[in-house]
Image (cartoon, rainbow, N blue to C red; front, side, top):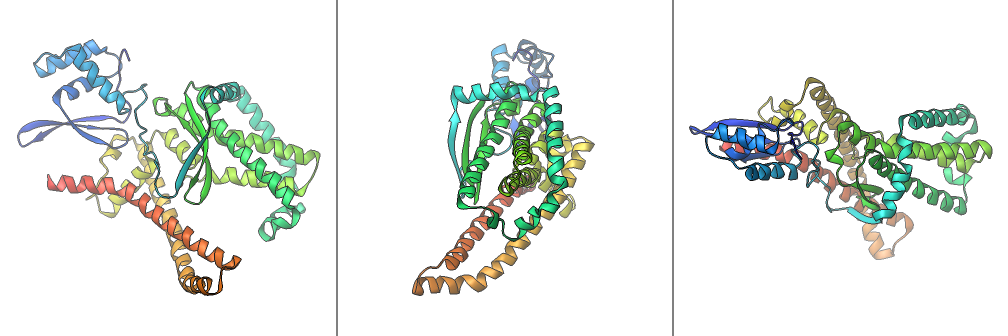
Length: 411
């Protein structure tokens, strides 16, 4: 990069430690490094208006010792590799990658030139005039069926026994269509990425604890602007909304309860994607819209700061403006309420399992398995996986704050 600039949210601090200056760098994700004077004096002048040679000259003047252009270039590369230089993709995402923890599996389905060509061919759908036109048409298509949905009794059918209106063939066909729509959702993310000139690595399927998912991997998303990242995150919902419009259009031509169920389930899936407390699309959209990296961790940091009356602080929150601080505070409280309600549900579920599971397990060993006993045992496994993952996620959010607080007191 000819004129490097520090990414938004990066801060530099010169501290006095036992009478000698020390230098600290804080990244957008809250990472902290104690850095050498050379890195500090090069980075502090990287504002996007100066070349690497200019940075070397200014660092020489600040330090009183010669700094070569090559040394300044190495500093810029070090910063870029950690996502701290604007416009250069980081080696790793600011948001912690899930990796392969307990209960998570990923399998690639599509990648390479074929995926890039398909995504590029669909990128025109993200031009503003196409977006406005298609969204208006999609809303218009939904108005007639939703106006009469109560009279059709579909909602009552879903809450009672939706299988009574379907056959095994219907279930197989509709299940295959929903899988295709899920992959189309991911193609929406890929097409949005190509529309803003980002590279798409792969589309695949996986398992997140007990929930089957599809995913898209984009190499340089964190190098884009917040508007570009928001567009990529919203692309999946946009494509799935358009797919639902085709379903409702077919239903208007040939009214059929199974098709109405399919279209309604698709729209309910879209609504579920708008809840921001799990790592679904709405979480990333909210994070990118306000430029808040690691939104969940920042929210827990704010809540923990309030609970401890400021004794445990997330220093990264100080780098945000008032609107971002308000978003973090509201999200932190809402997320804490969601986790509390979810945990209470797990506690009540655990009481039910404790009353049923030991006896059913014993009867399975002595009398043999039945469908009802197998379902109770499966609930026990699901409950265990959920508890382990909730604990792991809470530890991942809170542990860095607590470790930094302990280190501060020790120092």
